[in-house]
Length: 321
Image (cartoon, rainbow, N blue to C red; front, side, top):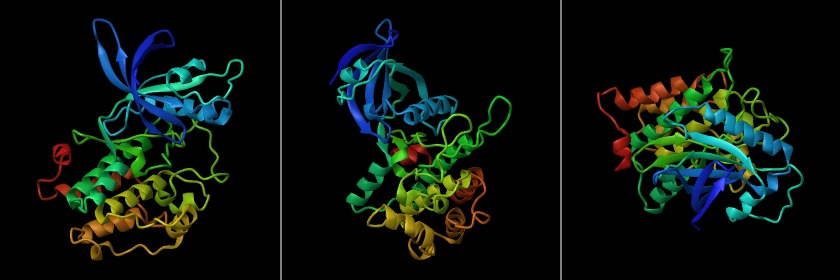
């Protein structure tokens, strides 16, 4: 698929292949080309052409770009550039769907950090397909790195020192990347809440992946940062048990289970889960918001204490192997 072309007359890219199709856009692996044979591997996310004439999707895509540009953290996928082009961008990317852009309508894209690895969803599927069980310490390590990224995003403030109130709203294995070096990075802030950046429509439509939603999401209620903690707790439980405890035959059943299904005693499900880790899971998955962890940082610290209180524990290098 390799094609060499300029975007916006300034940045030259060699597009190698499509690597993912997301809710709002397609993602391509590419090389950014500079002078003196400079080349940097990047990912280019291009908004789906079918959304190019829908103002809300455009504003949310722009909002995602602006939001992530200021989230500089080792556990969040970075963004390097954001821009827009004419319809020819879709043709050059092989994404021309036949939609006719009108007048000044544009094709929006963002240039992002390329993660050489897999998303967590693919990783879980591969472990299950091999009939293996992920070691408990690695399960907690992965969930703790997600919590680190969330803690940073949740604590982000604007220039006036006011909280942006960021809520990711789609924390799921598909929105987590894992590099072959053992890095764990949160991505896909396309349906996030953030003051002044992304339009809010809570109570009108659902956002997120059904079997990883919080009870308040599944009930069409307004969310706060504790919603992301619940979703991260679902991931932690899945990594430890090899299954999503809320997965139903369809989205409606999954949402119903999230609201009504009794939370199991995890100590009975996996010998690695001791009293302390069971308490962590119960607190992350508490339906009562007053009982649930109030911050991703506290959730992260409890997981890290569980891993390292004996003086040793997993690292990026452990995960990479």
